[in-house]
Image 1 (cartoon, rainbow, N blue to C red):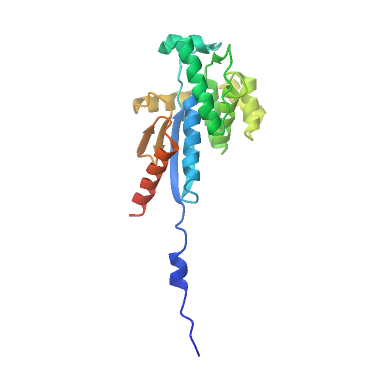
Image 2 (cartoon, rainbow, N blue to C red):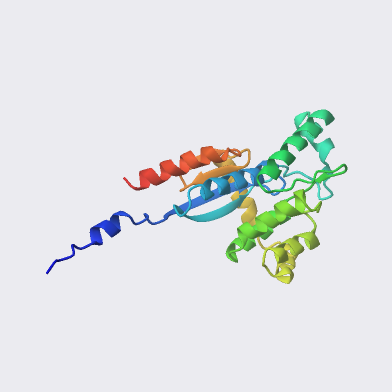
Length: 234
């Protein structure tokens, strides 16, 4: 009788290693074009490493313009005032962002008369959405509302509609905004990141130890993710 050797060792050697738990914290604002670009680049990097990571994504509040009046400000006027940007420079930047967004599957619909708006209400709603397990969905809905749908993400009705598109209860979202129940905790979290030297967004933190500033190319994220996985296996 011929015995068949056991195949357990061979089977184990060809198994795919389990996905590594990966915590990613992103400090950002919903009116920051580079924040959605950075997110899309990160997703592109993760797609290039299928099955290697079990990702937990958390968004943290940052206001590009904490002193922005509730009525907002004309975007071109705001850029000229804050950065000294000329109309020609502004137009060129919009064109570059639009092309980059399109390459990553996101639509920037810049238009004459576009306004920069106050985002403190949006951050309060995002804090609430985190507890509902729908924070990323709401964040993406808010990026789309501001950049693609020409909507005022400081308007309570617009915010409630975005919450509904993200799978949240619009009535409860309106209540959250009406009583500002998360205003203080959002202020405290914003201060926390400022005290940790986050003064520009997006800023990414991987595993609470690797900080990556700015909207990096997908290849840069891939290199970092590979390093994180390699170090975890040592």
